[in-house]
Length: 143
Image (cartoon, rainbow, N blue to C red; front, side):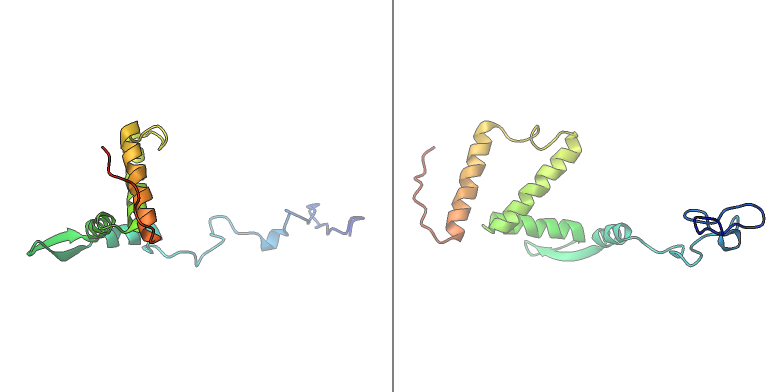
């Protein structure tokens, strides 16, 4: 034993923090995790993408239509937002902003609506907020 309490092997190799004994180290060409993730195991992203691409049959205007699950989910979100569901409308607006940001490469602050469009959208959201709280709509329609 050395004065610091570390073992010294006969070859002069000092064992200590970050220096494991030679007989306990991984052998060359051998994995440190031999039972790791099996080949072919799917990640969450892969499973999600596959599931969203699966086809389902929906009824739209009395017609049967085959669409992906992603298309069906977006359709439902848009329909709920259009019918006045404030939470759905917020999710939809965030989704649209995110899609625009990805397609243009710009930030949300750069992209966006003109001043008039932003005012209209703010009024709509304010109206939805007041309706969801049960307050009467006192804003006169002036355009």
